[in-house]
Image (cartoon, rainbow, N blue to C red; front, side, top):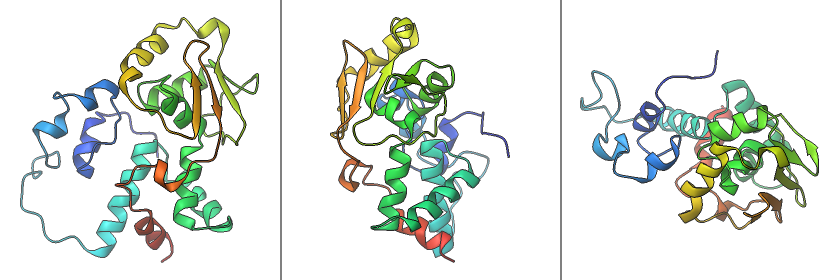
Amino acid sequence: MARYTGPVCRLCRREGVKLYLKGAKCYGPKCPLERRHYAPGQHGQARRRKMSDYGRQLREKQKVRRMYGVMERQFKNYYKKATRMKGVAGENLLQLLERRLDNVIYRLGIAVNRRDARQLVRHRHVTVNGRIVNIPSFIVREGDVIEVKARSKEFLRIQQALEVNSSQSRVPWLEFDEKELKGKVVALPQRSDIDPEINEQLIIELYSK
């Protein structure tokens, strides 16, 4: 299945929560979810039946998958890897998603959303430990240094993103030098650093069947 390229605000309305797919628009009153807090489509406002356990598990998986912009097969591979790691599988899954290079670029404030971050990586604007990495799914490790290439530091899209994200708090497991456009992974993300609205246990239950 191809990557979704339609209106991303529909995805937020479908899941009933903000997935922060549009950057600054998500934080302001123009967010469609603020004005129409119901699912999109002809029957979006219709009274829905009580959701089953499977339905809740599926919606949670779709919410997280769409939030990070990951396709189904890749998401399932993250689940399999998480179950093989030491610790709690659900927390391992979220940690792997947070450590994706495109997500790290977004968390540093260099991009307004994960989609833009993915494009910056693919277009070779980003280095990891001094080497160009153009794979958005690249998993960073503690101590890795992520930097925007010298020739790309004046890129208008990056400067606009920094301005938009200047008022947003950054995650504690990343350090960022805004002047040099250089970040460092000072620790691995903990569960407390990740969106508290995510119920990862539902995802584990879904895939465990």
